[in-house]
Image (cartoon, rainbow, N blue to C red; front, side, top):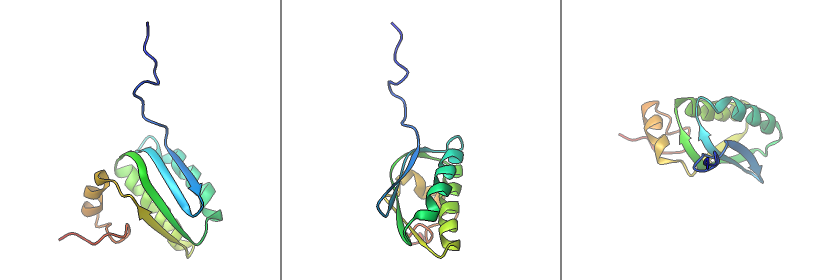
Length: 111
């Protein structure tokens, strides 16, 4: 009997507004950033002035995902609004250090 393709698969990426919190979930990678940016560009104009981007649901992130997060942050900055990050996954930390992005993500720069 064939196995279900749903078994062991990673959830589809999603960006959902929950009050003043944007919840990002699933993989944020080269193959998923385009649909995620489409969602972000649709949501951004209607967001409150201060929003938190919750990364607790992110299952995987690569450099394209980091670039997407920075672009969302820049779009908010250009609009005169604020974007804070919460639940930053450990997998993201090396990218933040490599690209000196700790201040953007509200973290103290390491050494």
